Structure formats: structure tokens, C-alpha cells
Length: 575
Image (cartoon, rainbow, N blue to C red):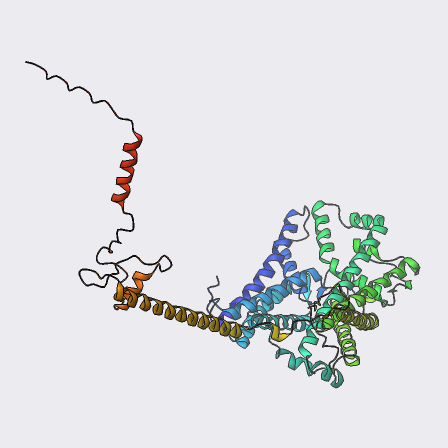
């Protein structure tokens, strides 16, 4: 339960807390390595300066290393992508929580206020960390620090606010204006938001396949060059604390290596120093590379062979994945075959969605390539990693060539399958038809009129109740007529009750079981008249009663018992 008060102050506090959490996590790791080191190069102040510098590096800020042999500061511009995830998640969550406010069921805070507060709070802590880190051996480059840190915070804070408001679609209107006119008209046409969502999800799947395939290539190459990787790992440091530090550095750089592997599979490859390109066709790494375990996975110098060319299966798999997702989504939303939007129009839209997904996938890979590479020094190490525009362009080409025909084919196949099964192309239901063993039999399928609606059922039920009520009334009238006839007959020749109460002298007929009740109804039957106030009249003597039954049983008993001899009387006792 959050107890912060909504407003600009809550946003500033949320941004400052998010920055403090990220900075504190990195500081704890650095201090653990410094404490465990048997021969630290500096005191705790140097470790704190290094922690602040690493926190800035996680935001994409380039650092300058001052302790070089030549005295010229050497840039360190490779951002560990695993550390980059930490500030991204913290800023996003801070902005989202500030919009929610102190009450979960209360009104949402203004998006602009929350965004401004989180940005100001986070950048305040970032400025303080940059000023503190400028006094250490790893100093931030002020140009990159003033560009990368604010851009990252503003973008992720906006994403957090957008998430808190339920991903409103109007936020895309301003972004779509930056697209070319032809592509903008396609994206903003009918069903544009659904098409954009399909393309974004498919592009994400394609990028995931590319990065995952690159990670597999790096793992296979490390196993292939396992001896070189082991030697480089042991050469860097001798103590266990130093080896754990190197292992941690390799771990945070694994996503970077995966992006490098994806760039290698796409064709452009990556650069290991100025003029030294590594791609599937040829490999020419720099002769003097720093000993690092991940660099041992670089292919050997020389022309590439069929083991290197197998890497081309990764972008093909990514394109197939994009086409599969696009084709499946378009098939679910496809119109009926008889509509005017079917046929070539649906095929054209599917191809356009696949092309849009390829463009988004290329943009994502270009951003990842930019962040995965950078400078690691001067001269030969001034260019290190994949080139962003080459990686992005190759991604678009590979993905479009594989995704467009795959998407069109998947959509056509699924629509055809649904039509063959008797279902509509735009629905997931099947129409079941009745089969008969007789081929000459006429099959009558129930139409809409065969199924009674709720109102028709109610009308039928009321009609049946009226008919039953009419039958009962008719039956009662017949019973009253027969009773009047019996009364007249009894008055002419029968005996009346001595008290003149109209009680019939004889019993009712066996079929007339409710005759007494009908007599009471004639006299004016009330709601509680069915409860007798006096004992019901006894029937005539023709009906056997309890006394008659007892006398008969006694006679039968006397007849069946033998005669008994009377006993002599007892003599009286005493005189």
C-alpha cells in the first residue's frame, strides 16, 4: 500500500528514490569487490567514485579513463546492456507508481505532473553523481552525460505514465506524424491501431529470435575456442576476488555479445578496431586485442567457410517468426470470403503489415547495435562493435524477404482451412451439418425460426395455462349441473334432515368424493370455510361404524370359543 501524497513533490521523491536504488545496488557490488580484494589500488573513496561512474555508464554515458601510459584520456563507451536494464525498470516503475498516487482506488495523478516530477527527481540525483564521479579516475564525458541521461529518463518516465493510463492510443498520433506520407497513410488507415499492434508484437518476436540466435552463436564459438578463453581468464588476475570481478564483467556483457553475434549472422558483422571487420565471409580482427574471455569467441582470421555461413540461418528464422505471427494474426481478423475486402486486398494488407514489422525490427536492432558497441580507446580501438545503420538495414532486408511471403502463405492457408471445415474465414467457429444414412433423404436444417425465443416460449406457456383453466371451468360447470339434478331428485322423493339444515339423508356417490365441499360452496364458501366448525354429519346406517364392527367381532369370538365349565365359588375364609 503506497502512502505517498499525489503531486509534483511525490514525483520528485519517486524519481530520487528510483535513482538512489540503482546507484545503491551498483555501489554495494563495487564495495564487495573492493573489500574482498587483497591488494586494492585505492581506498574506499576510489571505490565510490568507480561505482558512480559505472552507474552513469549504465545510462549510456561515455566515460574517460585518465590513468593511461600516454597521459591521454581513453574513452570507454561500451554500455553493459544488463546494467542498462536496471535504470530502465526503475524509472518506468517510479513514473507508474506516482500516477497511481497514494490510493489504489483514487483518481490518477496528472500525467504531465507525474512525468515532470520523476524526471526532475532522477536528474537531480544523476547530476550529483556526475559531479562526484568527475573527481575519480573514471570521469564522465559531459557531452554524452548531458545527452544520454536526460533522454533515457524522459523516455522511460513517459512510458511509465502511458502504462499507468492503460496505453491510450492517442499517444501514437504524434509519433505517426514523423513517418513518410505513404507509410503514414497505411498505418493510419482502417484498423491501423490493430495493425500497428500486430506489427509491433511480430517485430519483438523477430528481434528476440535474432538476439537469441546470436547468443547461441557466441556460446558455440566459446566452446570451440575454450582453451583460448580459459587462458585469457587466468591471465587477467590471480586472486579469487579479481576473478569473480572478471566473471561479473563477462556476465553483464553477455547481452552485448549476443547482439554482436546477431550482427555477425545478419552479414555486416562487427568492427574490432579501425579497419578490422569480422563477418561470415572474412575475419580480420586487430592483432593486439586485450585479453578478455568474450573476445576469445571471435572467429579466426581468414576467409569464412561453411561453418561461418551456417550463421545465416538465424536471420531466416527471425523472418519466418515474424511472418508466422503476422499471418496468424491477419487470419484471425480476416473478413468473410464473400466480402469486398477479401482476396487481393487482404493479401496486400498482410504484406504491408509484414513490411511494417520488418521496419520496426530493423529499428530495434539498430538501437541495440548502437548501445552494444562504442569506443574502448583511441587509434585502433576507436571503433568497437557493430555499425548501427548496417545492422538495422540488413535486419530490414532479411526480415522482409522472409516475412512477407510467409505471412501471406500462413494467412491464405489458415483461411482456406477454415473454409474447408465449414467455418467462416473471420471466425473461429465451425458449422456442423446433419448427416443421414439415406442419400435420398431430405435433410432439413433448423433455421432461425425453429428455435423458440424466450418471448415465444412465454406466450405458449400462457396459452396452455388459459386452455387448462377453461377446461377446469367447463368441468366444474358440468359437476354443478349434475349436483343440481341430484338435489331436485332428493327433494322430490328423498328424506330431509330433521333440523332442516339441508344435509343429505344418504351418502354421496363414490365418484362424487367432493360433494360436501360443493355443498359448502353453494352456501357461500369463504377463505377459511374449509375448516369445519362442527363435527361432520354422520352417514346413514347403511355405512358400518366402529360399534357395528365391535359387535360383529365379539359375536365371532363367542362362536369360536368352546363353552367353559363354571368354577365353584370359593368358600369364605374364617368362621
